[in-house]
Image (cartoon, rainbow, N blue to C red; front, side, top):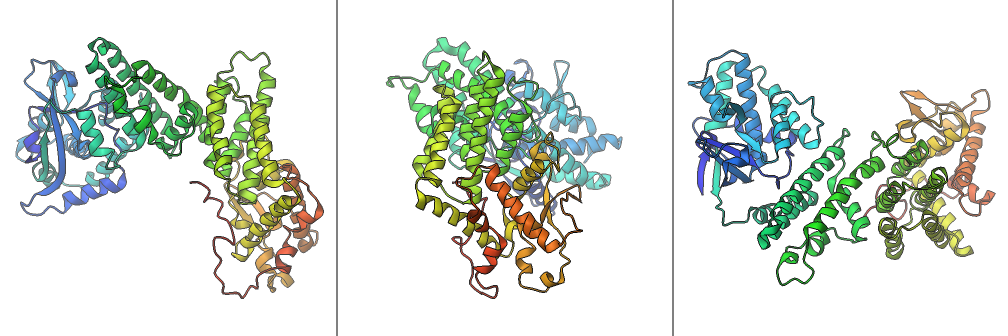
Length: 620
């Protein structure tokens, strides 16, 4: 182990990012930390930056002729920090170039550029930091040089652009002397512990030990490394698989790159481990712990000679193909700003809107079921009656939506393990057993019957729970305003009343709710105000700061709230077909019931989690 600065290790050297590494993932917090580290360096005291594990590889790794007088080192560990400092140096060099300065810290501009940023090899300028994957390398170079517009960027690419913008903002007002001091600190006073690895070490296994077991990476990132590692082990076991192993490795890199691109399309990227978990459920069947992929399916032991059912490259290829195929459907399912409409034969506005409504309910237990259903319908290209098949699909999704709304959002019930397993397994059954949508809908019907309508006592318990949850919100001080599904409910109600367009996407219509103003002095000066102001009959949707109103203020406002309250509650029962509707069920959810049977408003008792149910705390 040696302690060296960037000036010590750059020179006749290129640093390569191997394909098993994750993309650049540092954000503002990490960038700010390293900027502060550099800023705080004083006098000639250096700063310990961290470890850097390197392995010398064939120069062709970096598209460099083996006869060239350069070395290429594969970065096994420390690539996030090294990439960050490379980006900073590139911004310093770019800034000095714009200032038309010929020297940096006593060295010529060309010398500094050639040593730390890029140098000419075989009549081509090559960055000192390169990627093993050629496509990634070209895109990285374009981003660094401000020419990324022709590329489709993913989350990791945008992180690089963010780092560029971060450092540009920090240095844009610095004078030349300050820039030179920043350059000197970065290249001469930031110390790494350099660990060299020879070819006797399996770097894929080493990478997994250093990162996966320390939980530094997402499991999706580690799985990519594991699959690449398995390709190498299979190739080493039988050299005849060399070409096929290389092609499989290319397909892994391509699929993972495509996944990152799709997951990062929105302003906030979707979590890759959520996709990995749900895809594993539909591909292999429901498992509680995603680690089964590493311990059972893609175990290193499965390529050993003594293992009877050895893991094959064909098996890996099919899995990777499914990952690549499913990501479009997953993003369609989860992202409000991305749609397959016009691309997939089944992706009508009706399907999009109902999946959007299910997303609004924010219950993740059904993700596997819905993704499996999307894979099922997407593969049904030869349907003789597409319109009828889509109708059946929509009826199934409507039943899913109804079950989530009633079970989770109104009652706050939790499914037992058997019921939850039944739902999770449907994704696998859709994909592998061609389970029909009517059969799945029937399973949900049975669950609804068992949960709510098994007998008279079960039914009464259901309505008592629903009333208790609503009542607890009022005694929590927020009433229906505290209901996480209030926007979902009001949007459905407004569409039914013709106050907003059915053609608009459900999730895009409104972002907030607001109370009407109460002018009735008798209510304003009474304890009842604390209930009335948050009653469902007093809450309206808001769009672009405009209140969408169905209130007729010419009428008695107090009576209007009461009437609107009952009207909306009746809609709730009828629209979602809540079992055994009658006037008593609705009155149990009315304001009068809450005030007549309420906990005194002066009570000091602290409400526990048993008194009300947090709609967002539903996931394992």
